Length: 173
Image (cartoon, rainbow, N blue to C red; front, top):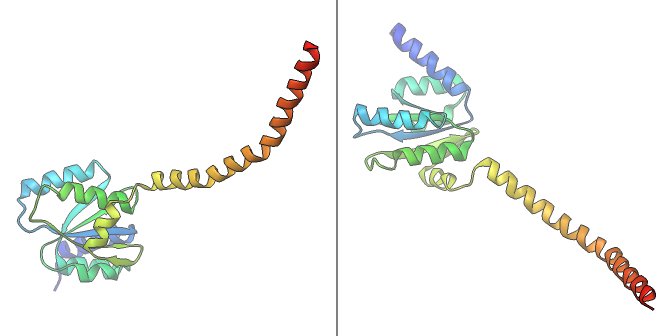
């Protein structure tokens, strides 16, 4: 029979899981309470929530929130990181925060309903942020257009130079 505290914890987790599109699950084995506090504080500064989750309650909350892809990742001591500005920022923030603690392992994550493994989380962390990717895309699209505009303007510009030289020669003569 579930207690009121467990029902409240499941409801809180379900609310947290229903409002996210990405999450990363880590094994927090070997960390002290003070180290967990340091990790939480560092991630909070980046807009990321890091919560230690009881597996059974986390699985129930994930099912209620429609995030069943999180359930297989919740084995052993689990902590879930959610938030950040985008998926790459979440992965980078979590990996940076957990880097000093060698005992912590990333189990995997979830992005838009798809489960990803540890290698994919690491690869995601190496991506530039969304803003940088968008600016690179804009630069890649505008560069050929600028080159084309320069090429189309060149004959007219050259005609202007030639007419100016003809005028200068007639004035000199």
